[in-house]
Length: 391
Image (tube, rainbow, N blue to C red; front, side, top):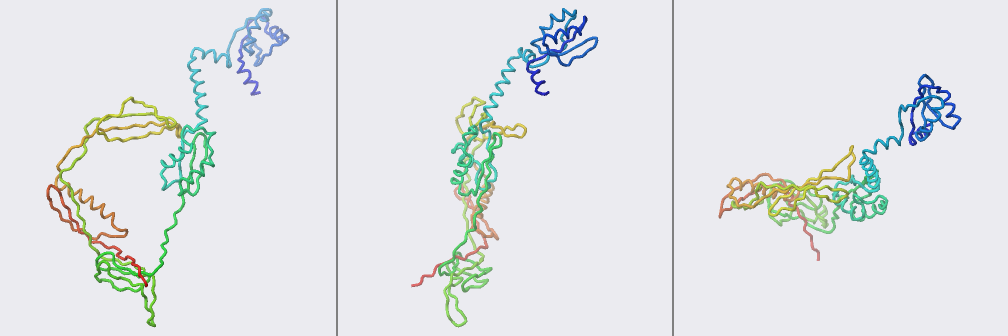
């Protein structure tokens, strides 16, 4: 039944009324001639439906029956196309849209990388592009299994990965390897000596014989834990000494900050360049060349989504801010602030586990330069292993 309705709509049909005369004789003449009607109604104003191609052939039978025919409604594809003929551009546009959509559906629109924690997504996308997977690539040309193997060879940190196709989106799922903790093999015979001068505040000996105690002052290179262990009977055993010796130490840091500095300041000029990125190709939206002179450049990329689906279209904007280099004289207080910032960087560079207990700082200006001297009191592990040579 549905297929019959679809066929009638595609062929087009006319709903007409029979006025005056003898409608019964009219319908009898038509049936004998092989006409097919549907949706017939019998009343003072009879009506029926017939295909549009056969409607004009009904007029001779209407005259014989003394009736007049009047069209009540025209339905179907032929009449729809006839009405749209005035707006032929709409039809061409719709046809072009369908063709473009069919062509684009055979290509990769976007690539979504998930699961990576230490590996940069940009590196993954760059490697995928080198191996043929990029926005705009044909879906039929992508061999996911071979691509997965190549990627795992290029990135040893990847434990496994899978590339799935979801419509025009490629889902790249990555699971990284869990790094094994580094196990230090303690072999050979050694002592533990002091790496810096200081006063011991805590001792934890794991192997060997301690030669110092808490509160002792030690010098750099002094023996802290011996690799010779004596037993109750007076015998000696050579071992690999190991210990953690926490001592209060002193460090010095000298920072020089010139009071005459060169800085960049904005000139007030700004140039904005925009481009449309489609399948990796850049189409300029503003026809402005690269400006000359000193500029700070910043870029932003805006991805376009349709109903939550990422499209292979994005807008990239570059902001060029004009700058110039000028020489300025900063105050002593500003120089001190810069020196303190550099001192914080120095503290971060200290050996792991070092605690800064106190900072004594002094400052002076010589030859238009601020000299910032800092004396740091720290707590750190000063134990360092020293091998024992046996001849």
